[in-house]
Image (cartoon, rainbow, N blue to C red):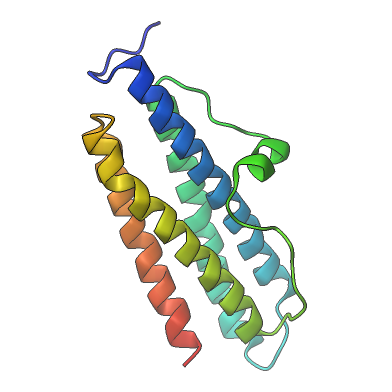
Length: 157
């Protein structure tokens, strides 16, 4: 059935493609957060392990929400690791260091990268592509990432 939500097919396609990149970033970040949770070592293991569990749980919800937003626009969400690695702005490379400080720095860097990507699309979605709904959606997502980044930064002080 044809998607008829007041946004042209061309605009929905552009927005869906940008959201596919965001989905890839979110999935890679989810995987990296799981890695941090599973492989953390150090004297602060227990508390940080629990914190990373909160983060990957929140990340899983974000991944699902982004994929569903793509579907709302009438497009299919990429759903293979190959697609995610082709679309992501993040790197899956894991540098040495399983201590909390090293892992938090990596996760912070990825959250900040996603923040930059989202911020670069908010106005474009609404102004160039007439999609206020997705613009609003990613604004809320931006706020989630900014809060997580703040908390990660606070761990590093």
